[in-house]
Length: 96
Image 1 (tube, rainbow, N blue to C red):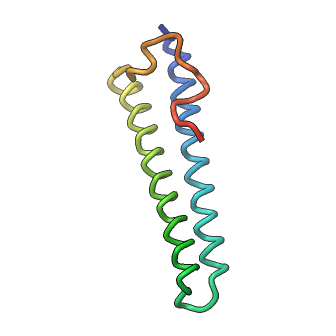
Image 2: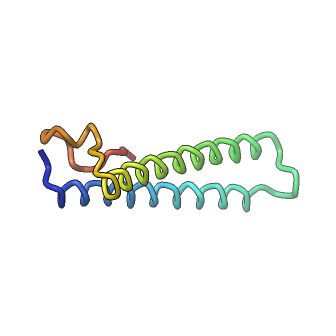
Image 3: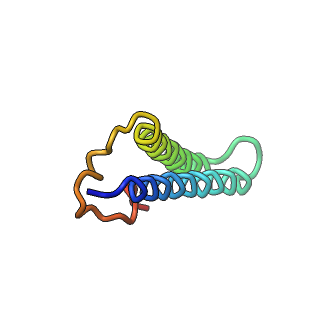
């Protein structure tokens, strides 16, 4: 089993990774919106905006889960199931 310190480090990395993912998704949405000419985007622009918005929504959910796991452990000592096994890949819970 991981030590308390190792678990905190893993969960911190997960939160940081999720935060970076959300920030990147937000930058993509902003960039696409700024590229679309006029106030009413053409169908291709609308499609790009919708896809970028979906990715942004997914990134927000990933951050929400990472924060729930982190606070659950730090505040209530709830051990995430995947961290109970020492063989877990400690590169982070959420893949890019």
